[in-house]
Image (cartoon, rainbow, N blue to C red):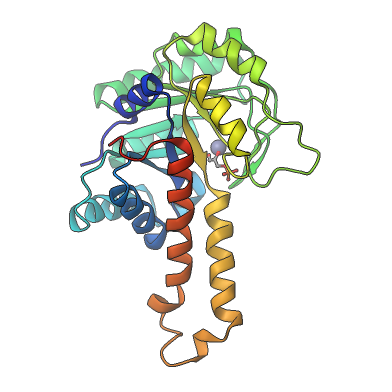
Length: 287
Ligand code: G3H
Ligand code: ZN
């Protein structure tokens, strides 16, 4: 059964580790992430962007696929199904469809409007025990059509949003979606420390987890980050493994063109990437 992200993240915050949110795109992605979580006894969050939701034929289809897999794969670790960078309307649709967690990305609204919409979603989601993530500041770069200017969050605004009763808070601290450019100056730990000081036990979320060096990940966790989002890194691993298979001509040998064979190296590459992240985040054996 899907669970809200609230309890697993409060546990992670208290235990000084982070739970990975890994974005899904299709059956292979979902199965690879769920199996890796189960094999490593780790809680996990499946992230679904609005674009990926459309690609997978809508939120009802996603919920049906995930719930089906939880049963047939006998997944017993805590799993949350989470809308990633959702609009207000998208959040409502996911609440209706049976998601167990939503992110409302109101960072592009003036703070007053962000507050109003966040409050309303907290009320609606709360009635169903669904957890809510809000964003302050903006994550740089682009993910699935969501473009952020990379503004560093104002700690006072973070406190204001945290006090509304969200379950987790994403703050822009110099993190970027996609690959980090060579001239990236790193995460702003002074701002993160201030946010953590003002928001206390609130689990903090680090987006743009792809390519952040291990030492920065560790420092971020020590400063209250309890959820780390990874998307691009799984895509890169999947693409590289698939390319290697095709370039080696394996799709032309025997029944190598069978999609169940063609997609297998990419599937294994996602599993390896997710396991590596779970080790780095410290969530193994924390289910
Ligand atoms: O919301 C999802 C993430 O922030 C993923 O970022 O693609 O850079 O790993 P990433
Ligand atoms: Zn993100």
